[in-house]
Image 1 (tube, rainbow, N blue to C red):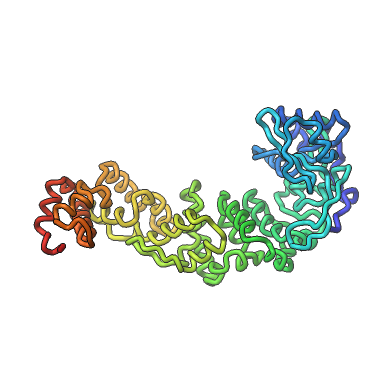
Image 2 (cartoon, one colour):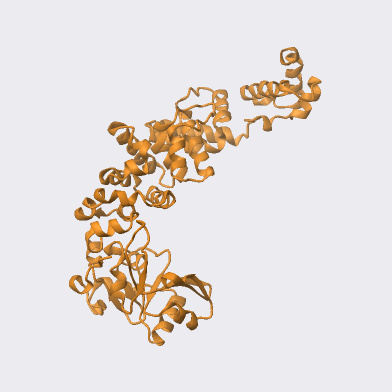
Length: 451
């Protein structure tokens, strides 16, 4: 790796916190006391130690960090000797997990990296004694800042603070080199721009398309993880637009890209309408809005497991539960468009689609263009009907299969299934019929038809 020269691009002195507004925010932040104790222990032992990466970025953006990573001049074996509880999670790369008072953080030796031959991982690392060289190996300037809250030292060799203020994602050094090293970085650039509502620096964006052969080397599982984070953001439709502009989309979601420009635009618009209406929509519902055109709808609940949607979801290495939930929503997306004039109509529809997904299906209907007032009116009807706890499946019938078989004189066989369906149809029309006596009478009347 040809790392950029930190000294040539340093935009903030190491002790800039005396007058820098960004540093004032870092100084005001309440770092966990256990983290401060870890940093102080390393410092007292004569080592440099900094909080690095995403946590510094998030603090400067006024966000709560999800975790804290520490970079230090101490080698892993030296860190291990300084603390009572240490887990050797990545000794080859100088990383250990330090546990202190219920708090845990990864502590990694400052390091530089060798060539990336597999498009994802460096072939070798070299341990360093100063933090600037460690920051030079990182992907984006906004992730290449370090702060020592004990000594109040802020290190920003590549202008990450400036890029935060400009709301831009920019590679450290030369974008072509960064993306040629690690093929996941282009997708991470799109994901960060989406999650933070930033722009991508023009030179960084321009470097994505020429390096997509390296992106192709990245495991589908890692691609999926980044895409799921993008899709879970507040504005995922913008992320899809950036995937399209950067030419990542045909590689990541080939079946969606193959729909053509007009269908792609509508799929992205559906996702945007969904999130605008239901910002807490889960992964399956967001995927269903995006991929609706890739599978037929079927109100009776049949899911096309060989549809382009199913194939794409498996291509992304999603779990079986996530795939099933998504396909179920796609297949039943016509729920709100069906004729539901009477309560019996609504009970039949709910019996087909499943009452547990009625609400998500109404959100999906809005994404597909159903007027919000109409969807809300149907939601009120659904809530009122479900509050009465109507029988909607054969499991809700007042007679089970064994009792039906006994009444028919046929303990086993297809007649029992036909009988249960007949009884369910009757109680969907009129729930008051769901009593043992009323159902037994229906069986007596239709006994010859069922045999």
